[in-house]
Image 1 (cartoon, helix red, strand yellow):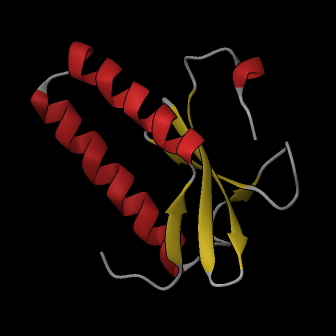
Image 2 (image 1 turned 60 degrees about the horizontal axis):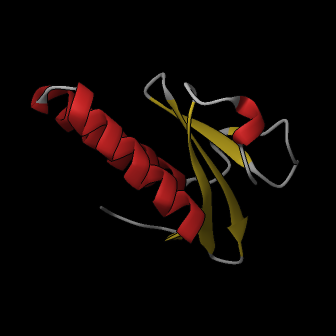
Length: 100
């Protein structure tokens, strides 16, 4: 992946990503998992190159939201010359559980 901004995942976001992948491995085919992985990599690359590309979150003005496929949202913020990924949230989860 070519980078502009350095990408840093918070422990919380990594935990959510792990849970999502475990769920997908149980319920999706290998082909669907590959598509998911490619789309996630593509989204991270876009954020790295242009962090202002995606929409500002309704939760806070300094946080942005990128949709990764239709069931997952990635929340992040820019700090200095890096991007901090705060949450990898499944849209199938209760929105009240979103922690930013």
